Amino acid sequence: MERRLVSDSTDTASTFNSPVPVLSVSPVVLPAPGRAVDLELRVSAPVAGEDLPVILLSHGQGYSNHLSSLNGYAPLVNFWAAHGFAVIQPTHLSSRTLNLDPNTPGAPLHWRSRAEDMRLVLDRFDAIEAAVPQLRGRLDHSRVAVAGHSMGGHTASLLLGARLTDPNDGTEVDLADGRITAGVLLAAPGRGGDALTESVAKNMSFFSTTDFSRMSTPALVVAGDKDTSAHLTVAGPAWHADPYFLAPGPKSLLTLFDAEHGLGGVSGYDVAETTDENPERVSAVQRLTWAYLRTELHPGDPAWQTALDALTTGPDALGRIESK
Image 1 (tube, one colour):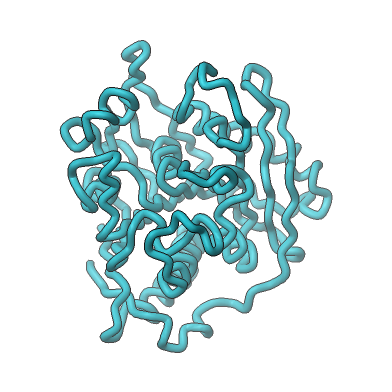
Image 2 (cartoon, helix red, strand yellow):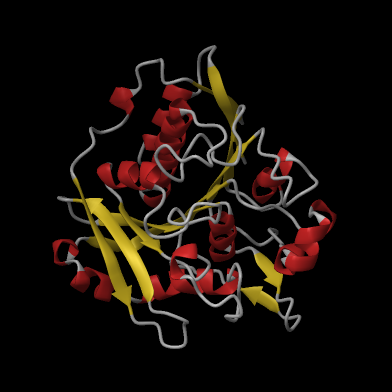
């Protein structure tokens, strides 16, 4: 199935509930013995409501100091929380804000500990609720999704079932977590092998063996058709659609026209490193990711179909949707 995504110039406000006030608390600190530093989180949620589904959001990298931390991705976090989700954002060890010794095990991207951070969060929901009294008893531990942008998309793919071979010991790495039942991959890395640049294959060899063939958890893959990521891949923009085409269903692919790696500016408001700043594009990503996760975590909820009907008809297309 393929549909075209149209501009918000059409009246789509009725598709979504009105936003509600949001509380945001940081840092929430989880003790993490054996980790270079304890795990710091931001927790954002609507100020009222019960049985809140949870999104674990994994940040990317990039040039800015603070977007790659619990302080990034406000356009997504604020929208999701204002429309009924609790959003938990860890600061991974790869964040520039931590200023870790470059010789710290796992540096510079800490691909394994990123996924382990999310598993620690899942293990410690009770501690998180205790640290944020306004949330006590309000999280729905049975409805959990993971989302990630760029390197965060790699983290999310591992939690959803993608595999790789550890370049240090040659073992197959399986970090899938069955407590996560849906995902969103935003400008995520694709396949390894000859799709990588020589520099990445040499210096980030964990990318070389990425295998999506067992990534069976439902997911929405979001890719920009101008996202060449030439520092990572020789395969061009199609590389970011690999998690859709190389994984089993059920999956959906949102391809955004003229979008580059920032997908219009999802990592922060007015971010200088966003090369394709476009508020309409960000709005489309906000709404479609919200609707997708709403329906996946509440089977039978019409949000996804309603969003598709509202946003995928008309002549002023921002992108297209296909599913399998």
